Image 1 (tube, each protein chain N blue to C red):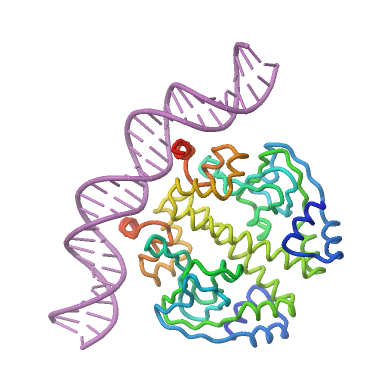
Image 2: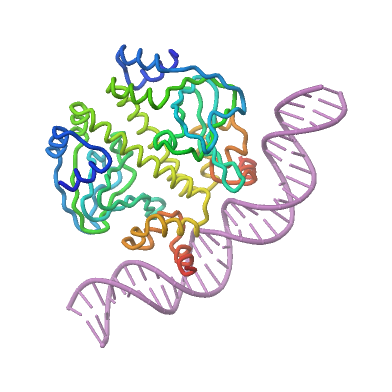
Length: 187
Length: 187
DNA sequence: TGGTTTTTTTGACAAGTATCAAAAACGATT
DNA sequence: AATCGTTTTTGATACTTGTCAAAAAAACCA
């Protein structure tokens, strides 16, 4: 729990009142490897903070699983689409390792927004960060070769390569597992 | 100017005080076709509302122009990356048609956020919408063939196809102009 | 209208990547 | 240490798309 506050205070300092309200809204969740936090067609009603462990989000497309994000320690996690629209999710969220999470419901978050302007600001800033990261990935995916994407990942997020099976990474990069394997053999 | 309020009120109703504050912060801009609203390496210090006309955002990559978004009537426009981080933009914003815009500076927007909680909420909700749209495009770009992407566009945003030169659309879809031309000949 | 520029289409070829199938390597378990 | 299941690598082939170059069509303008 202190984990969350320490993380938040790194880029935005909350008042004591807001901290208390936030912590009182949180519920601890412990899940083990391969369990699901969310399956597609369900409505995602919670925002999660990942204290320890690793998750992935993936789509099912033509019987194939397409991983499109990973989350690790200190990440905020949700099915953004379902959580914000209230519509059924099109993605699944699965545990890559045994993990500890803290959850807050959409209703509770709305309450927090109404009572603590600064929490809404915090979330707005978090959205900005996610948006910028997604935009960067989007541009890269479109204009770089598979090899360049892998090099990028080696430089910018080697921790993912170390903790996640190759098949998931291949679909994250938008290439086949075989192609990724061949690229790796060139290094 | 009423245009902006009419648009906003469609999905979020502001109080009269907030409306006044917002309108007092706006400045009208009129630009003609092919002019630039922003060039890369500049810092984007404004958020724009597009009342009439059309714009595109594009990157220069290996001497090629890569269009990655279009904006039309009622869209909010900025170089999201530069505006939020305060760092030099990596993209250009150019006029596709003569256009009328309303601008608000980052400083003014910060003032508005501080004085009118509901304006910050409005912007947060706008971010959510943009994020979801970008996420959808990201997933599509990765998992659909060039032909499927074009079909999608025919269904979901035919107005873009009608108003924008083919070369821009090709790079928007992440394919070469020649490939797009060949796809179109199949319909 | 004719001429000039810009945009779009067509053709030939090369490169990159996906696919299918099988082998090898790795990990966990007993 | 041997076995089973999973993950990764390798090989052969086919397909999609990019690239370069040129022709055709459309838009623009005097």
